[in-house]
Structure formats: C-alpha cells, structure tokens
Amino acid sequence: EVYLVESGGGLVQPGGSLRLSCLASGFTFSTYWMTWVRQAPGKGLEWVANIKEDGSEKYYVDSVRGRFTISRDNARNSLYLQMNSLRAEDTAVYYCARLSDYDYGLEDWGQGTTVTVSS
Amino acid sequence: NFMLTQPHSVSESPGKTVTISCTGSGGSIASNYVHWYQRRPGSAPTTVIYQDNQRPSGVPDRFSGSIDRSSNSASLTISGLKTEDGADYYCQSFDSNNRHMMFGGGTRLTVL
Image 1 (cartoon, chains in turn green, yellow):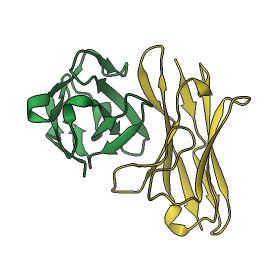
Image 2 (tube, each protein chain N blue to C red; image 1 turned 90 degrees about the vertical axis):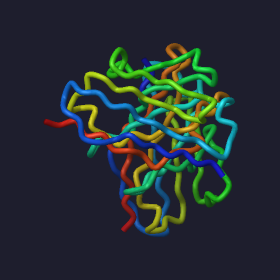
Image 3 (cartoon, each protein chain N blue to C red; image 1 turned 45 degrees about the vertical axis):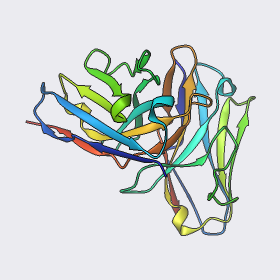
C-alpha cells in the first residue's frame, strides 16, 4: 500500500521560511513524478509544484515561483518543499501527492501538514 | 493559460441524480485528461473518476464522468445519491503548453 507522510508544518512569521518533507513508501519512489498541492482555509485545492522522477524538471504555480523550491532525495524516498519569504496567503494545508506521468492525475495523497503564516 | 471553472455548490435529494460541470477556458478540455476528486472534511482527496470517465476500483458505478467537446466541459454525474456523497468535488487537468496542473474551484455537493 502507498503511504505518503508529510511533516514540517507549523507557525511562522511573514517573511520567514519553512521546509516541508514527505516520506514515501509502498512504491518505487524514484520512478514517479511528485507534486505539492495546498488548500487555504475556506478555499479550494491549488497546485503548487511538480518535480520529475530524477529532479531534472520542476514546475511551479506563478504565485510561489522564486520563493518555493521543490526537491527530492530518491535515496531517502523523500520529497521536499522549501518555502521562503512566506506570506499570509501561503497559509494552507499542504499535501504531497504521487503524479501519473501518463495522464497527469494524482494517484495517491498524503494526509497533509498545516502551515500558518502569521505574526 | 488553461483554466477550469466549476459551480460553487449544488444540492439534491437522496436517490436523485446530480451533474457537476467543469468548464475549460484558454484551451480545449479534450487536450488532456480530466480527473475528479472527492474531498470530505478532515480527509485527503480521493479519486472518483480518472482519465475523463474511468472509475477506480472501489468507487461505485453510481459515479460517472464524461467530456463534451462542443461545450468544452467535463461532467461528473452521481446517480442514486446517498447522504454520504455530500462532499467537495474538484476537477483537475493539465496544460501541455506550460506543463502546469490546475484544479477547478471545487463544488460543494449537499445531499438532503
């Protein structure tokens, strides 16, 4: 069974930084694209970033490009999201998900980790 | 950029049928697959329809999906509604031009 477990969320001041992690198990992590998706309070799901199997391609939603960095460590079966220059509007539950590179659907999701940006 | 638009909410009675639309703009809905996710409060999203009209194992056949090229939209239809179908539903697709993913704004289904 596929497991995706996020960690690293918390309370941070505006302008601060946070690093989210996602530990994967139950599948061959190095053969899948991975994704971060977030949901702000009272809002819908928002795609944040994708990363290719070997980390050679990365894509970001416009609102986080230049502030967030997606990365992965295939030896550790781990996905990361480094978030810098955080804003109040980045407050959300952040999910990691496994992405199909055939149909670009999200096959499995973690339970999410909560990020709150507030002074 | 390609965008997806859903109605904010729909409401229907148990046993009835409801259809949730997902309208594409800035490109063709048929260019990439559309997927549908169900999200209940406090839980991670789960797939109810993938590749436009495929149902994952474990999803009842009351759930179906379709694409209408003429209206540039996708639809999720749930028949024989049950109270437990009440949830938020999101469509999702992919923009081949910029390799970005996108979600519709989500539709809250109330069954009462």
